[in-house]
Image 1 (cartoon, rainbow, N blue to C red):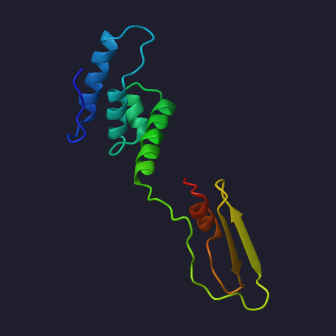
Image 2: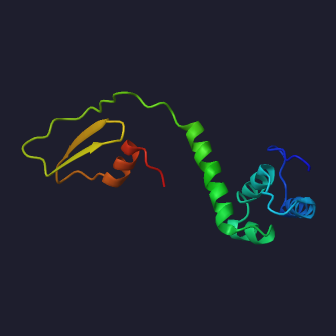
Image 3: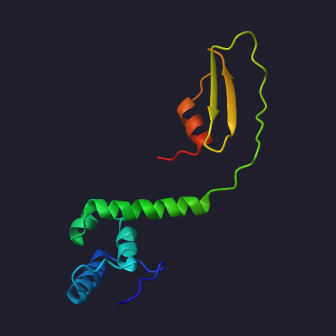
Length: 135
């Protein structure tokens, strides 16, 4: 099988030919080679996943799983090292705060925030950033 290079762009017809050639040679129960999955995933950068799955006769859900694996591994490589402590300068709350938010992640890191009525803060985004949750 021809190895796919990450630097060369392949069109869907090239990948279809490679899948057809592999399917003609494979033995029953043989799994799709990783290089073919990678090629299919690369196509989804330019073509919707449902079209790629249909054109290559792939299970859509399996293709989505491979796409997610690639995204997760890419984001894990790009994650910066977190500081052990980060202090954000702020003024102490005056009077009683209208809202107190306390968070603790699975590593035991804690964050406590005080908000007043006139502050506009996206608590969901702040919580995701602190907890390291990605969508």
